[in-house]
Amino acid sequence: ANNTQPAVVACLLSVLASILALLSPHSIHHALAQPITKRLTSSQWMRKMHSYLSNANANSELALVSLKLLNALSCFAHGKEQKALMENFIWDIKVRAPKL
Image (cartoon, rainbow, N blue to C red; front, side, top):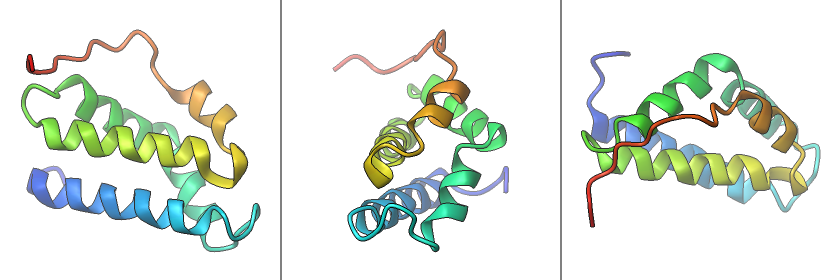
């Protein structure tokens, strides 16, 4: 999946964020969302999202949808996954974003 087009990856991340946002208000322990959140807060996925954020200059769309997904994860089920998200987030990341 390393050679996947950035636009496709951005679309998939946006869809995941939207799914989490839709499932979140229905139940705190939604059976369909739990595997998604566990996978997305794993160190493997967090490294991918960190790479998208740190290379925002190369593809700002990927960086924006990564932030959207991180926000959806932190809001999911009234913040149930916030602890895992905070533990796996690299806080000293250097974000190279284009100047607005």
